[in-house]
Image (cartoon, rainbow, N blue to C red):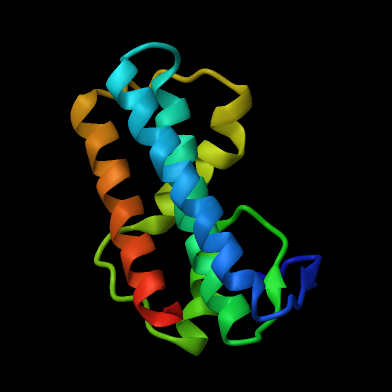
Length: 133
């Protein structure tokens, strides 16, 4: 699947994206710790950390960045540049940046699910930073 839009950014923007991803990760952790609000919001911020970390890799390597929240498209693009060394299904978090932001569902997220989302986001961020510097 090809995104309808993509953009090439200045290489220096990669570090800015990493900084924003760090903020998203901190937001996810704070929401999980507060144990209030919709648990989906923890996963949303974890997804945003993953998304921005991966897009930072594309920016760093001066590749076109797909303007999408679809982690399937983004991971496919990143893997063409640098194999992602994270052993988790990143694409499963796409729904938290799309439909789950606007719809309730029967899915119940417990503390273990939230911890897993945060751990994956941390792992992706650390991996991205190791390649960006």
